[in-house]
Image (cartoon, rainbow, N blue to C red):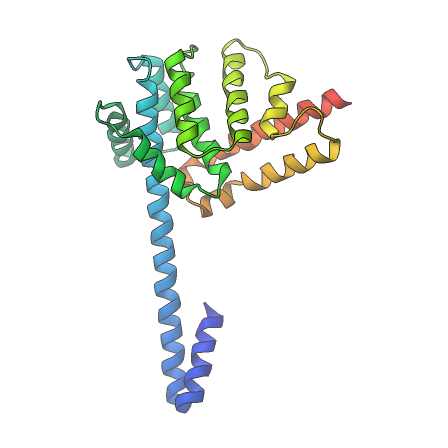
Length: 251
């Protein structure tokens, strides 16, 4: 802000002397303020859209097997608590969830909104998917229709083949969790997006890249709602656990 204000003042001074300096500086300050307000407004809009789409798609996915179980409803309520939503936000989340459950819900159009927002942010896509997987796995059973819906969402978001492999690993991880088992070593490689044949340096590079991309502060600047910071922390913990398991296996 200061630099642009000073530039405006300098240009104003060159054109109109002292009066020009004051006018130019004032215009520079006003311009920066307007730009900042516009950027903040755009970011808030993106965050609200991300949250709205999260619950709408969740409602659609939970109904994929023909009905929404009490466990799935409880999972959505627990997410409200985790996100520390206030009453107004909970009401909106409930409305979005019900919107996703409706027969005329346009899933592809909703996914297109998220895809546009996260086109260059694979970490945002992964967090979005992680929330959906948590909801459908809440009852401990992954119905074939739910799996099919998950893959429809994955493709609708424009995920790469590597990201699809990561989702498959997350699906298996959910099954392991339901059975009180830990993720397999192969799944840990998939979480990092590398093969078991990768060198130690390649594994470490992938780990550091994912940790950087999934940093809550970076995601917040790209449209992740502040309330979803805890979800982002869970994602980084998953990446860290996968890296640690690989490290132990390699001695």
